[in-house]
Amino acid sequence: MNNRVVGVAVLGAGAVAQRRHLPEYAENKNAKIIGIFDRDEKRAAEVAEIYGCKVYNSLEEALADPEVEAVSVCVPNKFHAGYAIAALKAGKHVLVEKPMATSLKDSHEMLEVWKASGKILMPDHNQRLVRSFKKAHELLSQGIIGDLLFFQCNFQHPGPEFWSIDRTNSTWFFNKDLAGFGVMGDLGVHKVDLIRYLTESEIKSVFASSRTLDKKDASGKPIDMDDNTICMFVMENGLHGIMHFSWTNYGSQEDNGAVIYGTKGVMKIFGDYTDDIVVEMRDGVQIRYSVGSISTNTNQLKSGVIDEFVGSIVEGREPVVTGFDGHQALAIVIGAEESSKKGRWIEIEY
Image (cartoon, rainbow, N blue to C red; front, side, top):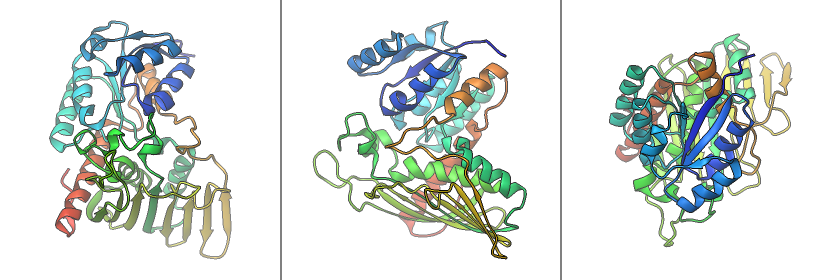
């Protein structure tokens, strides 16, 4: 058993840090939280007291700490690239929240710095680590439903204001300058990475329609980003599919389902909340797999992201999701945004 302990600094003390990164680092025997940095000094101090770690007064101070071997970048999207690049240049391994940047220029620079650093750059595309999606990938790779024909995916919940620390419409997710994207960059980025993983193919082109249907900012004005986006995709392997991302699902259940159609049958992942995977074969046979549920905003489960990140450092291996995957997913989000603006199909420029 490897007893090596990785010293970690968490950059940002908002919702994702408090609900995912910090508690999962605290539970990992190979990780030690050394310190935390947040522009809100009061918030940083409160979180540091909980975890018994130091508070940094600046990003530079955190990155200069010799006890810190790795960082989690949990700040608003606008700062992801800058923080990650600075950390990689400082010789730190980096786990960065999604989307890993807000422009392809920045993500290309991240990839260059990452490759030169010899360190790990892992974006938080956590759906690859959900046990049911991992099992689905295994089953699809085995050809359980034959050749793939079509896919349909959803990711819908009530919106980021119900997730944020303050739980108000003043959330930075509704600030275009800080967020960069609306629901497509928040939820869509997860699912486009997931379909790349499940189908083992890249997305070639997209036709998207984005709208602001209901969300309003703190002043009561409609946000200047999408709260609903519908996408049609064509994969490089010829597979077609559709996805719907929404911040206006005000029902009792989030929708994180995926349906994949093949020549031998249909696979439904989280199609209902009693069975995680249901495979319905063409001959009428139905196979049910109970593997594990998925985390929701109201039911936080261990993501597995921290364990994978720390494990990759300790074991000296590449994580299951890399900076390359983050870049590809970002390119798809940007392509969808362009498609919606221009009202036509867009070839993804990676």
